[in-house]
Image (cartoon, rainbow, N blue to C red; front, side, top):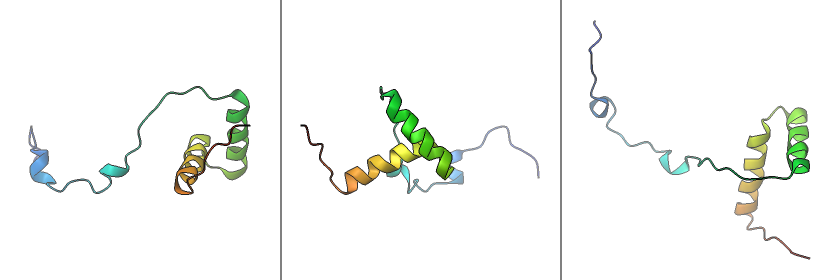
Length: 71
């Protein structure tokens, strides 16, 4: 079997990606140094990358509809 020079990708996999709606969006934001250090320490303990931990925490906030209380 030989390789073709070009492939029609749509013909190879015509199905839509079922996970497309769950794709993450990259953002740039300023976060306090102490906050980053906190999540990096948690990362060292758990072995989970700190960015993943931050995302998991934010997801939890959304699911539980947590509101910020300003004092």
